[in-house]
Image 1 (cartoon, one colour):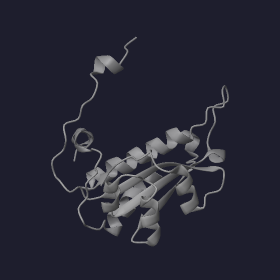
Image 2: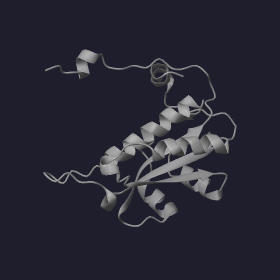
Image 3: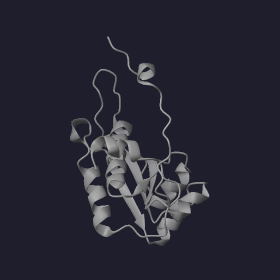
Image 4: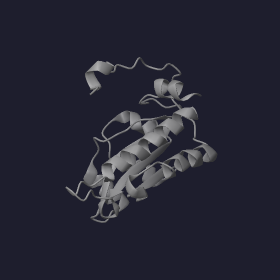
Amino acid sequence: MDFKELILTRYSVRKFKDQAVEADKLQTILEAVKYAPSAVNFQPYKVYVFKDSEMLEQIKECYHREWINKAPVVLVFTGVHEMAWKRAQDAKDHTDIDVAIAVDHLSLQAADLGLGTCWVCNFDVAKVRDVLKLEMGEEPIAIIPLGYPLYDDVPVKKRKSLNEIVIEI
């Protein structure tokens, strides 16, 4: 699909079919994450992939919405701040930015393969830390459910107009 069609049809999926994600498609999606740009190419993150395991159920329990239980795969992105590039002038840590770019690559690649994702940030951080047994320097940033959308209909996107977000100088 061409890029404009891809960005117009990708949406946050919260209803999934009862269908497994093929290993080759998951691999393609993870390759998209690998090639996402990051500040100084430090890639200060890890991606935990949960599928068909007891830990998948444990990670789903870290989010309070019922719909996540239908997702056949869940990915957890963590940031490792000590690995991140920090801007010299103000020590701005780019971990969150780098994770956001990686998740965007994942979401677009998934959509291109007919799969859906949803960026989840409102989860129980302490519980995720416990399930993954994370070290102190590793921060859970996003949970991404992945699977085939239950419906083919793309919802209408509500976005601000360009003149509300673009400032030409």
